[in-house]
Length: 294
Image (tube, rainbow, N blue to C red; front, side, top):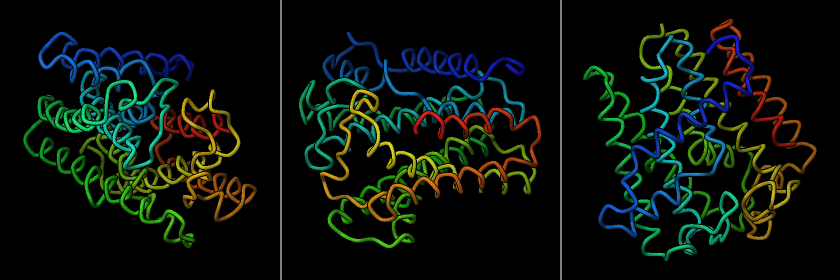
């Protein structure tokens, strides 16, 4: 879909991903009905689908067809949705609002929410394994998503986040935490979308972009938690500060956090500069990540 406005492209990918997820999730009337209804509640009808957008935008670099990218986009989004369900539980961040509606454990119950996260994680790998790909590419994709999701990725970052409550982390410690908690899955979305066909120098540039983009996303999230309203966020505003969690704003102050976001934005665009027109959607999406926030 080259040559069409970014907003049109974005809405098309969001709609495409929503339909694909709706098809991939178990039907609401399939036993066990309550679990399947809760899974659909947690995934469908909300979110900006930034990770699927990144996967599809990265697919432009290798000329991948949208049909090939749907599995990677949906697999990453299912992992992301599972992480939100678990993060919102009382034993974690204990939140009651997500994507503008009650969190999964509030709408259903804690045990169901726990099982929803487990089932969405399993479904993500099922989706990835069913994708049309050669054996080597499939194994590489599964390995990438597993590492991004586990103790050396998102789950490990969440453990660091919980351990950091009430602590004064250094900038290096905060960055290390978010490379895992937020950045790992964003990196996986980009690299899964790009596939294995790019030459090594381009893969290195893309990998650098993905890592800096993950940090950019988190810095902007921290700023938004301070500046935006609950209605805008779709989740409880100011909760990080209320919970005494280390953030870029609490460490650096609001003004310096915004400067850091601008620096990371420039680094992302520099990393994409060698791709020329093929990287247009990633450039636009990076601009969107910043501009939609503050």
